Figure 1 (cartoon, rainbow over the protein chains, first blue to last red):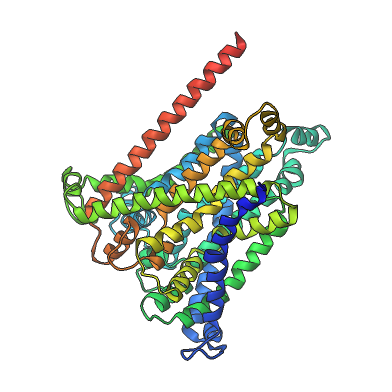
Figure 2: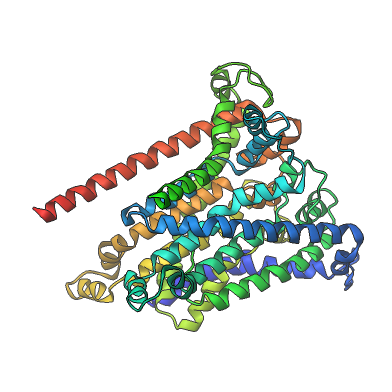
Length: 270
Length: 265
């Protein structure tokens, strides 16, 4: 028996539930109510309210990705320098929160951030000014960073622990100081992890509708909210598909970006 | 010295950031008052009411059945695919792996609506089956991702040696190859289970009326106020998993210590 025939179930599955569904999004994105070809659904992105939602999504997800990167890189370095035996434990610490429902965790930030919430109570004990960010874009950024930080830490951590100690020692023997070692050796070698971390944070942040729903007080619409409402409330699948296609341009660009920088899948999550 | 303290402090700060909402939820589950806004005293009444609330228990059982069966089926399909891909030309393999990664790299909302559209086109009844199919689809990449590295580490000679020694293909696979793959398969299963358990977005688009998982139940409750029983349930799940992890970690480290002492001896 040929080993290759074992691929059949997987090929059938991915054709039926990955490739054909994506073609359906393309199909619906380019037709109108009567089924005739139109570009209207794609061009709908340029209407004022859609444009506003889209640019807000881009800005918020960009800021969140930067914050995640700035927070995650030093953390991943610290974790990578810890005892190697604890690998699985460290990964688990980041996976563990996922066992508590993601909606509830995000909702808990409401309790923490509210006008008379936990954080403000603590701040008032120290006579510090109150933090008023709930129902603003800042709260959405916080929710994005909170939810997607593990997706930045894990790939960077994984690419850092793969770096051979002798490479670093060689750099030091050859007279590099620690900053030079970092910039010329560690950073370039961890780049695949950084790139895959960026895509793993940017794509879900760009397309979220839940975080803006829960922390933005339902007044702030992101492009994800617009698409979600087109599908579940207005049943306007054509419009929803058209707007998703515009989003997919960004998703595909970031996929290509990560494929180019990470040919061997080194910056994988696991 | 100062460097060590700042790095410890930094790790602690991030952990507080990650776990503060979880602590909040656990505290809220013991709150006597129904609103999140004020503390009404310590009480375990939500834990008692939880076990009388059939709607929540139904959602829980849906969630667990979905997570278990989707992870199981995804693990089988994914593992078989990995074994098959091993013998392929690099180009075909990369293409297949690329397709496998689509649901993982693609935005959940796009995966969700694409599956919704295919189910509409096929005129399927939205319900448990459609959610299950969707979950299997997004779980497969996690299995492939964790099994593939183990396949690459395999030594092909061991399989051939087993055949030379008279084992059938099936025997050789289950007695020689499978044990080597098992850690990867288990990681994949666990990842898939976790992802399915935590998913909201894709379930939201592929579910029908009447069928709810915990996530979709919570989402519909957000507007009218979350039942505190939900906090109680999540706290139970979280503490159970935490204990399980601590236990298995301890067992592992004991085993490691033992083997180390044996080596020294």
